[in-house]
Image 1 (cartoon, rainbow, N blue to C red):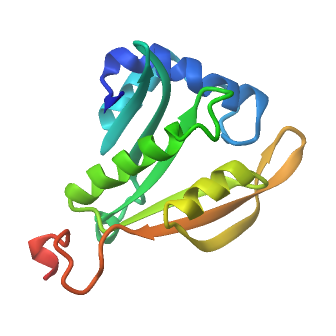
Image 2: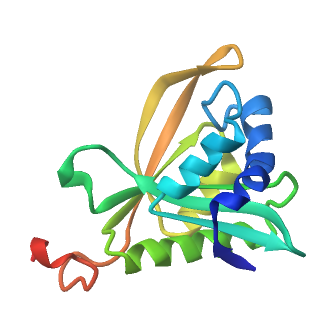
Amino acid sequence: MIREATTHDADACLAVYAPYVTDTVISFEAEPPGTTEMARRIAGAHTWLVLEDQGRVAGFAYAHRFAERAAYRWSCETTIYLEQGRRRTGAGRALYETLLERVRQRGYHRAFAGVTLPNDASTGLHRALGFEPAGVYRRVGWKHGAWRDVAWFQKDLCATEGCTCVPAELT
């Protein structure tokens, strides 16, 4: 089941996320955030969804502000985290598709996603969902004793010409 997250999901989302922080280079955070910070992030996201499996949060995906300046307000940055061992089950795709549809319905024009390289699973998921390569930031983050590259992907959430998701002020 996929549903909107609430701040009450902070502990469960943190349990999914913390191993990515401590054990991988996928997240560039050095330490997992606390429950209060995770709740703040959930409350501040454009959209935050959780994947439930038998009443337990097994993953989450969210969209948040892409950049500070006003001209970027119709773009969002997206991300997804699944508990370890959930890859290639279809759960990630379903969760991400739901997220992309929600942000499209809310008027966002383009979604961006950063992927620490190498990460074939995430790169494959983004490409399968129609994200296109937008560029690579080389040696942009230092984690676990090495410099890391981040590939950026972008997806149009609707066609530019005749797009029904373009806010009225842009037409």
